[in-house]
Length: 500
Ligand code: NAD
Image (cartoon, rainbow, N blue to C red):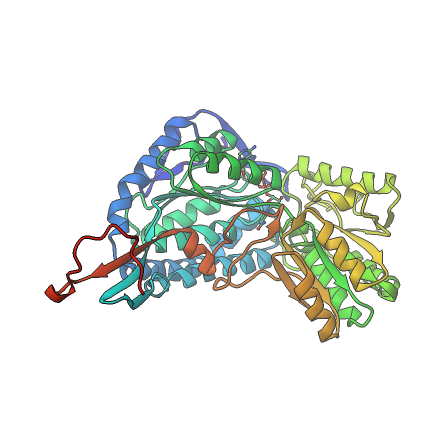
């Protein structure tokens, strides 16, 4: 049986790509190629942008209330088809179905947030900014917006972007990761079923060629992207040079500080979930534990014991805690990181390299791995590993922990575990990181707050969803109005108007 090739989605229709280049899509639990994905060329990208551009005036002039009603229907359909979407996410990514469901739920909540469009798009008004002069602002859409997504959240990350963009009156082209392309297509079909007009939401598959065509296309107004830091930097610089507004979220190295006064079994459970959930392939995964003082020995013992008990296997099997990595190449790269950690002198407490999953010998599995006594100059500390490898660094004080984290070039998320309000308050205030958890290991903000890191974890000014998302996808227009009556006539004046 031949492997099916997926279509693009343009003008509310599946559409065969003109490009003949394709990539393999794997089931990472079996190692089998299950689909082929087209890698779009200029003809494909031009076709998608033309559809989005054609749809824009009509969608911009659709009232926010009508847009919101379509979003509400879309949310209901996404809920109704959750099982099917979860199965697709888990099949192509490898994460467990329960984990896939959690991430899908967080994405659906962004649709719920965006359904508040009539309220979110209210401007400001001030009466009498001058005598008889009023001023108001309105929020208008940007035009054709593009979203470039990573492999690790096939639904949630695209959902951070397009519901808000579309609620604001923009049209959208999603370029999902070529490693997990199917969920985006199913989400597009459901959006059509919800009543979204043709051309408002389009899906173009591809790699660097398609991305670069989108970044430089004269009819694209804004680009949102999520991916690794080098790619985020490239996207930010290229799109900005071509006059677009850009938000490009990058990679991460998220630290969790554990103080000696913390509830250590509670902290260890939280860190195991945050370190090994989704096989460590989360941008908010905790990958570096910073154990302060005497917390270190008992914490490492607890982490070792709990990590060793995790059940690794295919994500569609009940009772499995952790699935495979996304590709064979990535699994081998992460194995190589473990080799380097050993060679550089870190203490390997738990080694996942030898893991075999019976019946799934060709799957891209790697067992949970734990390093202790890692130093800041080691490669396993400096690089984003993006796999089930948790490292522990030991420091003497909270001051030292804060200084260590603030020196790291990544600044996506961080957490502190303590029973001390004063220590937590100090950490929250002094830490130079975009998202902070206090006894919360993965502090991913809810849809009505904004998501984004600092420093090498975000290029651009505005975070995703929440009110920063609305700001990103709208342009503010300020209108100053006077309705003169005869006695107001002041004659000609060439002086800069002021209100004295
Ligand atoms: P990636 O950077 O390889 O790819 C991201 C997207 O960019 C994909 O759609 C891909 O097709 C495209 N792309 C890849 N190389 C490109 C290039 N040279 N030029 C133009 N486009 C290119 O990332 P990934 O492996 O899919 O995802 C994992 C990375 O994403 C990790 O670094 C992770 O930390 C990061 N991530 C960050 C966040 C966040 O919120 N900051 C969220 C999720 C993932």
